[in-house]
Image 1 (cartoon, one colour):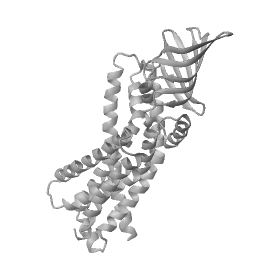
Image 2 (cartoon, helix red, strand yellow):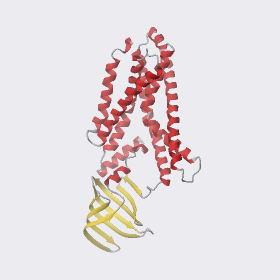
Image 3 (tube, helix red, strand yellow):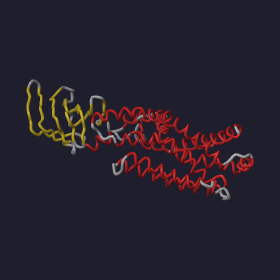
Image 4 (spheres, helix red, strand yellow):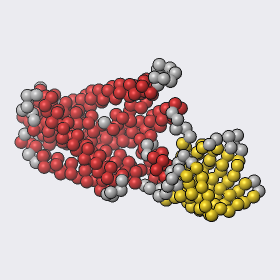
Length: 357
């Protein structure tokens, strides 16, 4: 039995590595074409787009792992059928359910490695990539971070620099905010303090503002301040979750909670990542069942096409619920668990007669 397990894992691992390398190569080429287009009018080293493409590719590959597992499983079973090894297993008393169990356990363990090691490595590369790429974009005037001390924003507008700190953000409002305004020489112009600032538009409405100019204090019932930000822009600045490791996401969640900022997106990303190993297993089982039910088809391409067709549908159903959760149409837990439960139910129904195949 140990020999059979080693043999199955060897074929499966080989298929995974080969499909992974194919996906990595294709995504790298697509990224390279994108970077070459971006830098066509910017003078940089010929190797710079190549370098950026390389460090940006792993995160895209991670997003493709459901399909990598899917196709790898199809290749695995196709190899077994082609060499009549499935019949050998059958006559040796190795049931189909045992093969699926071996693949499932291996995939689950690999999924844990991918989420906690590969994803964290890829997110660090993505963060580094975004930092390098920002040197060649016009978005440098936008800078916002969330720390234990609340929300910090740097804004450059009309040759003036604003440094903004708010204890909390609640929908379209900054609460307990303090604003320092500097001229082009970074000399202080004025400080503004307010309990509540409406940021629904780029022209902020500061209510009951306390303005400090040198040694003078001025009170304004309403003060209007032009900025490059509104609530939507601030929210979008924190939407690139792929540049954060799972541990950084957890830390961000804690900071969001202190700030009273919406936890929906970060919670959804964390739960989605944690559920990935299960999703990978379900993809492998589903792909294997498709191959078992189409083993008599002569066309190998037809088998793969059928598997891809149904798996793409499942993938987009999963993303559909993800969008519903992200827009708060349904709860986050529902958005993640419902697709998994549906997928699990389908697999259980199809697995019913597995050993007689």
